[in-house]
Length: 212
Image 1: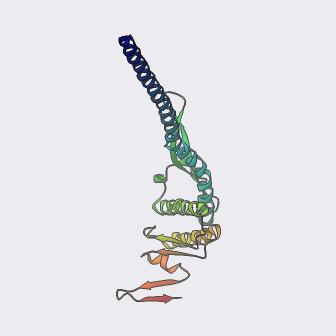
Image 2 (image 1 turned 180 degrees about the vertical axis):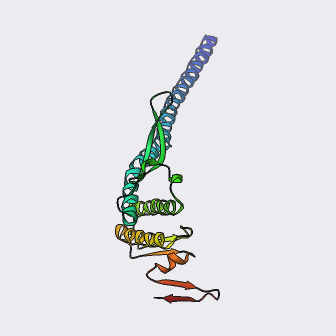
Image 3 (image 1 turned 30 degrees about the horizontal axis):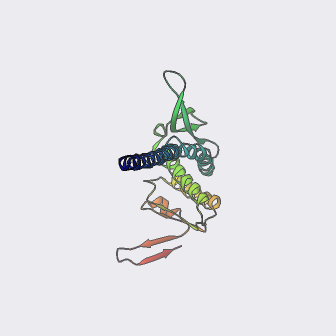
């Protein structure tokens, strides 16, 4: 009788241990399912935040606005002659379309659109600066706080008198578009200096002299 009681107790203990193991396995299985769900959610989030997700949508959304701002700046320099556009898709050789982010310049006087490298030296400088300034304007529009001063630091090379005047007209237009109080540009180009409204000349001795 005693042996039967001990055997019964041992069997009951084994059953209890097996039940505990089964419950532990079930808990682990539930945890694994949750981890799999979490991993899938994280992969989805990573894809959404990656180059083919929100970043691509941001580029697609930014392209038209940056183009619009750049074209407004170019009109202050050349009238309606030049305009630019960003292309986010291009045809594949095998058919269909693929993602792209290229800039094309339309010159109403010289025909079909072209790359920036197809422009003259002075035109390249002005178009390039229009794009850079347009990006600054776009960033200012997205800023949480208003930006009062736009800085341009050595952004242009040597300019002739005509292009220096265009450059300064562009900056005046940028000031209006961005609602800036002032635009400060740093340059060693004499023509660009002559076209400025006010010149702050920083001498070798560190003294700042205000001209005009």
